[in-house]
Image (cartoon, rainbow, N blue to C red; front, side, top):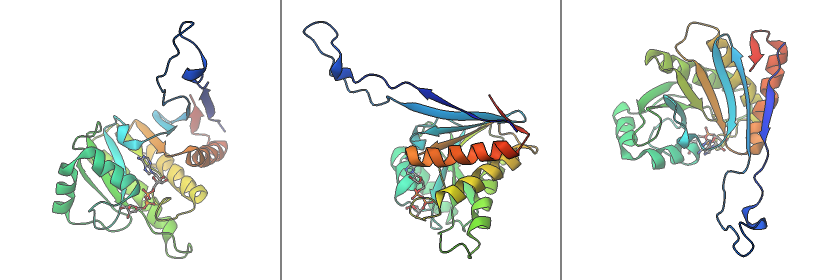
Length: 222
Ligand code: AR6
């Protein structure tokens, strides 16, 4: 099987530790000092894992981990509505809600992304309440929404692994295998990003992707 490569960019030195000239020290705080990513291909599509804030993604669509009311909340849902402005909430109110495992689409409001696909992840109980199947449906239904709009790029957060407490290793495997399966079929989607919030989440998805690549000969490193 093919393997994904982890690309690590060297951290930029702390700006306060080196002089611009002998008297003046730079005091600008550089926020992005570290960038890690892992990428690969499945047939002609690309799959990329990055660490960051999904509201900054300039893709055709970003995915929101919403709740059944679609009326907003904390976590990534709160961040998307804050950054996207009230137009998204207005559209959500008109749609009127979304069952767990399904997905709906609205405009992206003020976001750099054109569309927001809202999906509702399962709350993790003990694994016996169809949590796995429901999470698989989330990813599948988001990609179906993207295909219906003929979108080429989509960015996912790690659905259900925050407030809904789905174990992240298990969630990562379900997410990546479901997406890989979809990209092998007929789809308009050419690039899928996973935007992971924090190093621990990125690492869980990287491990899962490496695992999957070892077993799936149709996935290749780029
Ligand atoms: N960009 C990318 N990922 C993020 C961001 C961000 N800006 N902010 C948080 N995450 P959660 P859930 C990560 O709780 O578990 C809401 O209140 C976060 O670290 O947002 O599906 C809804 O309204 C975690 O890894 O979603 C629902 O009521 C992941 O996104 C409920 O929470 C998902 O965490 C949904 O819970």
